[in-house]
Amino acid sequence: MAPKVHGALFSPAAMRAFVALHEKEVEFEVVPIDMAAGEHKKEPFLSLNPFGQVPAFEDEDLKLFESRAITAYIAYEYQGQGTKLVYHDAKKMAIVDLWMEVEAHHFEPVVSKLVFEQAMKPVFMSAEPDSAVVEKNQKKLGEVLDVYEARLSKSKYLGGDEFTLADLHHLPTMHYLMGTSTKELFEARPHVSAWAKDILARPAWTKTVAMQKQA
Image (cartoon, rainbow, N blue to C red; front, top):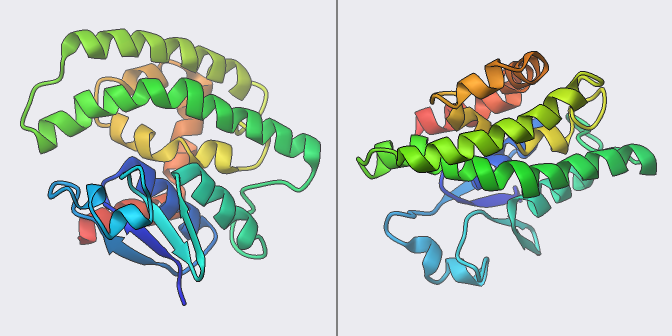
């Protein structure tokens, strides 16, 4: 039985699960959750994720929520196929883990606000971005990307010389920001810009974006 991802195709968190499955060349089923109708806040979805957030994931008798836990499971469970995504060398994996933590605690809190203001509000709420919120968080993101620029001047990817979960976790929010003025912050840093173009062009990500167009 194919794994199931319960979520919305436009959800950045659900997209992390989708792209991980594509990277590992795993066939999967999407169970659509209508977030506009509040399905993620009701049963039966709450039995899969009691916090009422997408995605939720099922693989036979295993049930998971939290997108980064899901991607880690996918990387290890299907380690014999597709892109490696993780290392089994403890020191190499420690570096990957470090940059996954950076994404979760320094990158995501800032870019999630920018994605909401610049990409989600105009499309789903027909509302203008709050310029003060955008300006404040673009400044914060610039500081984070300065750290990324220094790191990426020393290695092709965040976790080393191979594409890993540390890079993959950035894809959904970065994708949405490429259609906004925040794109300039990435382009202003040559190593960050090259890295962003590289990972956004990966076939697995192209397949993930295509899922939205096919819906």
